[in-house]
Amino acid sequence: MNESRVKAKTHTYPVYIGENLRYQTDQYLPKSFSSIFIITDETVAAHYLQDVQKSLANETIFSCTIPAGEQSKNIDTFYHLHTKAIEYGLDRQSLIIALGGGVVGDVAGFVAATFMRGIDFIQMPTTILAHDSSVGGKVAINHAQGKNLIGNFYAPASVIYDVQTLHTLNDHELRSGYAELLKESLLADKELYHSLIITDLSFLTSDKLIEQLTRGIDIKAEIVEIDEHESGVRKYLNLGHTLGHALETILGYGSWTHGELVAIGLLFAIRVSEKTYAIQLPYEQLYTWLKDNDYPLQLPYIDPAEILAKMKKDKKTLNTTIQMVLLQDIARPALMEISDKKLLNYLYDFQIEMKQRSE
Image (cartoon, rainbow, N blue to C red; front, top):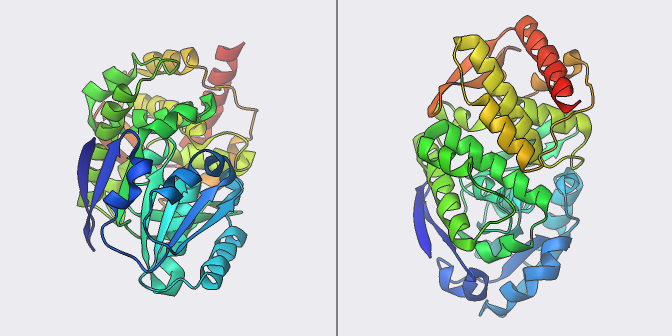
């Protein structure tokens, strides 16, 4: 088992990553609690809820299962979970466990942040994608007008990451998670990037997962510790997300996975970087790896003006001017304001290029 520590402003919390940790959950709790409320989704519950329940010594354990998928990150789910917490008699000494992927972690974390003005919660990620969202303390739900627009910064008490749960993921979820790992490598670690670019997602071992996920978590933690509330360098973690989030909103939450659209956003960010800085980045290498690992790369045509309008809803937009995270090289990110006119041209050219490549 590997253990990392993340320094939030309010407290330092551990990240445990290894095999079969779900059978020993009690050992990794930071203290005793008056009651425990496990929030999970229908898919994860069928596989792992019972394991976690049995691993907890506390006699006062409740659970609630929400529908799987991005569509559950909404105000109705949030309110329903608060209602359940009240009905179950949770108090300020209770604990919420987020057992699932990024959707469960975001929703459960936001419930914990707001129930009785904040109670402890623990992240128990069950997807590769959630290695990113479970660390850093961002919790949120979506609004019809944009992703993650309603939320808070609220650090977990700990993260318990059992990589055994990753072996039941479908191909979409594997691809989704590895897109975030690629993002982290492009931001901060050439060695990790070169390791990922030769990884075949059809043959992932637990050892490889632990190695690559631990490094991805460490990169995220290093950035978050410098800038917990996203006023500076933490914005770099949005590489690929300015376009990715806009596409999620336009196409409908859940029609593509988050990471599949982030992968397209990474390609776009690299293309814009090459044009902005007159440099050559590993665009072709990344495109080939994505294609070889069966990432969907052909979007339906979307009017660039519609994409631009959604990009302007992004939390990083300042005074209606879009800020994009670009790369001057691998491990050399930069934040750049880009005019509407240039972005419209970039979006148009990118869509044409992606269409031609798929023919």
